[in-house]
Image 1 (cartoon, rainbow, N blue to C red):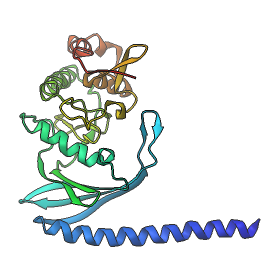
Image 2 (image 1 turned 180 degrees about the vertical axis):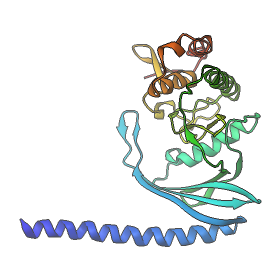
Image 3 (image 1 turned 180 degrees about the horizontal axis):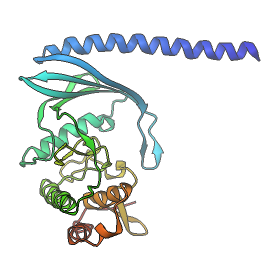
Image 4 (image 1 turned 120 degrees about the horizontal axis):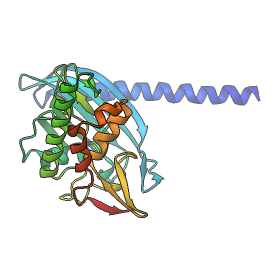
Length: 264
């Protein structure tokens, strides 16, 4: 029993040491490669390793590694995400999906998203890269105390909903962290890794996270940015008084006012 325990510990330590060596090696290669794109001042921000979540109710079992960097490109501060996916199916790569969402949105003048500075779906084999404008001091979404400030927030969300409808994009993963705010309460939406647009078949609606849609019947759902805005406000503890405001009711009336309906 004791021998078995120590063997298990030994295997865990060996795997951790191997992964650490792999990450250091990968980091050095990434820095060298990014410099070839003209990117400078490269600093690692984060590394995440996990298995991709549910697709059609079943775990994909596909592991991905995502490297995040802060850097400078074309004399502008930028945020870089590289994703290595251990599968031949590129639709599992959220970075590729995000690049395609940005290409779709670039046809429109959307002031609520960070600007796309650089992207490469074929950065390396099974690896994609995207560099976007770095916006400092972003905060999680929160409900302002002041009534006038709340009205401004609702007006922004109403405007954003209209622009996303025009761009034909459903975010699919809106949360208090992805629906961010600057210090002057300007809303910025980030992380379009599972965004959906009917224009691209690769964008699968069934990868959208729970809470980003509502049922319209027993076997149909509508994926809706306005619904996500209201859900986030509930998560932030919006008061019943604010729910009676006309600006909030206008957001309620937007829910379901489109045709992104699918079978489930």
